[in-house]
Image (cartoon, rainbow, N blue to C red; front, side, top):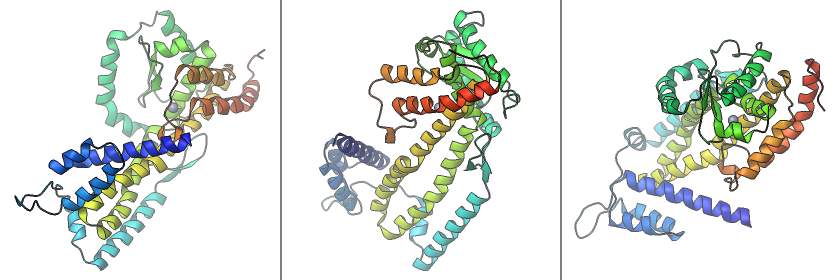
Length: 354
Ligand SMILES: [Zn+2]
């Protein structure tokens, strides 16, 4: 029941946000403004009614209540005869499938089949300016290499990289560590090799093994090219979405089609983008454990860290709305992965643990 209430509330928020956005995009008339103040399901109904009204005019003044700005390619498409529309939709479907199958490749290490049109280098080029700005904003808080916290992280990073030199990208990327003295529980690795660790994360980790679990996971995102994969998938989704959008713009009047377009994009987010992101997180956990095991860290500490993380961060968003798995499920999964990782540790000749 609780989950259902959360679901209903969430959808309500999504619908409200989407409609508000729609209204902001149009010049908002009096009716639209009134709609924005409503705080229940009637809001949606009235807005649907308002969308009927936007195509009509005020009977006293003759002015439109609010108008949709023109969307040239969709307006042009709506004006085509039915046969022409069917040809465009089928042709686009064929093109999208051809594009998909010619861009499939295997991911390194896990050998998962995936769609890729970008790689780490192209993303690094695109994000240079953003990354430089971000690093500049960290500058006043950066710890020097002599600082004990910096040394602690640096030792873990060197062990992970040193033990995994043969892994794709590890010896190709010029890794650079930055430790930011801020109480933020976070760490991430950029595609160009910048490893950013906040002191909040160092403080949360009880030992180097837990830190290795975090950094192994973050390095795995780069090794597995998860960022270019996410961008590639977003690109593919935008192409695929053109087909239902064209169908919607064929069947419904423009005002309703604009509303459905927005709902469809939120549904795609819930049904495709977020589950995909969670899948990549699970994969980074698996490969992160592998990297940590080869570097002789105690891989059993990974689940303990997520147990601490779960205790620390109360009020996580529901999993279906999150880009990451829940801390609890992550902890359980890492516990299961610890068995094979301990075997691998042994196979690599690491000293036994208690
Ligand atoms: Zn991650």
